[in-house]
Image 1 (cartoon, rainbow, N blue to C red):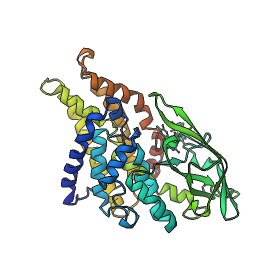
Image 2: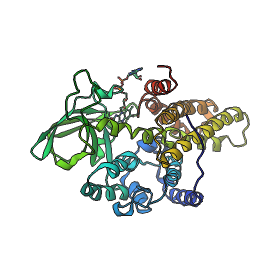
Image 3: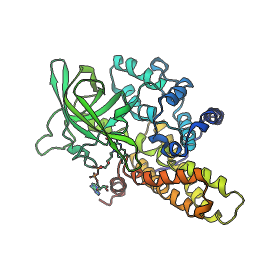
Image 4: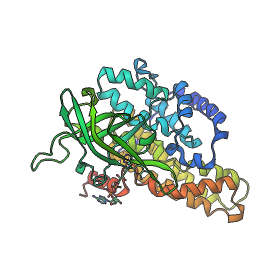
Length: 376
Ligand SMILES: Cc1cc2nc3c(=O)[nH]c(=O)nc-3n(C[C@H](O)[C@H](O)[C@H](O)COP(=O)(O)OP(=O)(O)OC[C@H]3O[C@@H](n4cnc5c(N)ncnc54)[C@H](O)[C@@H]3O)c2cc1C
């Protein structure tokens, strides 16, 4: 495992200042609950404003609405958005993984049709992986697409699909051929671009423990897809989907979910004395995790695929994000806890259990790390 630190481009610190100034104008509109939800919050107007500044699809070619900036500059923008608790969900998945997948593997026509919309913050994406009987064991999925004429017909059911009810498209992983007898179950899976307005799609929101409609059950009943809905190669969906995982698991979104509470707590505790041990320990852990996340970003920018390092960042980052709200609450007597911070901590307490489920559970990540160490 490698965790070398990348050198940030000279433009990065000016960019950080620009993003902070932009966010200052928006911040007064965000309640503690919105800041706590951060990348699980959805605000198209905010995403469109960000797109207009050129901060979505930052690394993509200009021909597709991108801005040809570096992966590390993009990481600076992500950090600032999360640190502020900005509601970035309307563009997060398109920018983080669906857009890059389309850029790499879709037809020219699809790239020109879809990517500029993601970069402008007007097209929202969701990820259709999990199914009722296929979560951690994703290769057990049963949704399927069959060829019909030039196109495909999709049937099946996805679950826990974040923002399906607010998104325009899904990237779905489904079976296009049975798994070979005695062969790997991962064979015969393919990825599709699904326009969620297509007839035959039913989306039912599922209320989460924090009281929000953030994820859904999505049913496909004879959904007709055009030929170019197939993304990449037929039957190679597993390799394609898993190659997105390092991008999905290593970013600052796996470390900074509770960060706005740390900022507010430090502000409230300034000059009071007594909190320095706990806050110091938390900031030291955060500093190390941030370095690890930056290291993976550097490897991704250089074309590497550091899946094990990404699993480590997510596991360690999620443990930090989950512990932080309760450690901070312990620093206050109930009557001294400022109202805004209390609401932030309450929302984070409801959300924290999901941090180590979404994007791959703790046990699955530790299995990946253990395999790399030769333990299994
Ligand atoms: C907030 C949130 C948002 C999500 N958004 C999406 C989304 O947008 N799209 C999407 O496709 N999915 C999404 N998911 C689903 C998520 O990916 C799954 O919940 C996750 O992969 C676990 O699958 P499962 O829920 O079926 O649990 P299971 O796989 O049934 O796991 C249950 C428990 O058993 C453990 N376990 C399972 N297998 C093993 C094993 N081999 N070894 C050791 N322990 C094991 C797990 O770690 C877990 O603790 C989301 C989940 C959450 C919480």
